Image (cartoon, rainbow, N blue to C red):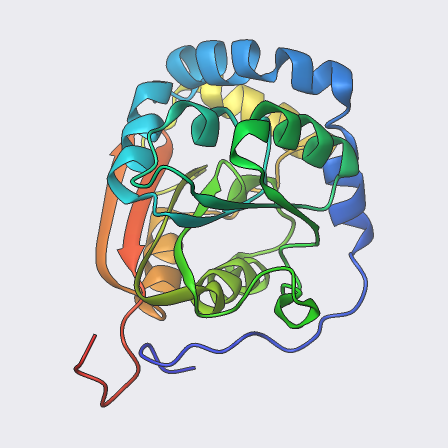
Length: 244
């Protein structure tokens, strides 16, 4: 794949058992406590990255046509200011409970809901939302939850590049296990979460994240806070197209 002309990945088949098991933990009870436990407590005291830095990342990069990969509780799309009065917001997740909860939270934006595995090609062809037309794609606290090495997780970067228009922004954050400073408390909690299949980040490193971004995007910025990497990057114009 050339950096200037990304294309959707080939069809990968049904979701892997690890993907299904990992997303199943996010039931209504877990989602009800997610903002308080993960975004307020764990982020600040364990991962050492206050949620305000993630919100700032959204505020810098979110566009009028935005796709959220791994919808979560939609905390950040709910809290950030869109650059237009009537944004086109698309929420993508494999878990139907997550989609119901997140869509209800941002109901004022009338979001489009897409149930899909982000490790497989996104369903651009079904008319729900269009490839190459999105102003921004967010992937916040998603990558460390997905099974596999960076080679397997690369499908997320391919999907983001395929969704974006030239000049569109891909941004988000992820918890890394190497190439960053990991405290003893963070290391212990990571070990527990990896054993339970909630995290799959034992091999996730800063250099690998940078390499995946370099293959598809330009204007890359990586900021490390604790063991969290916040990233933002631009989808380049196709080769030979200098008009955009």
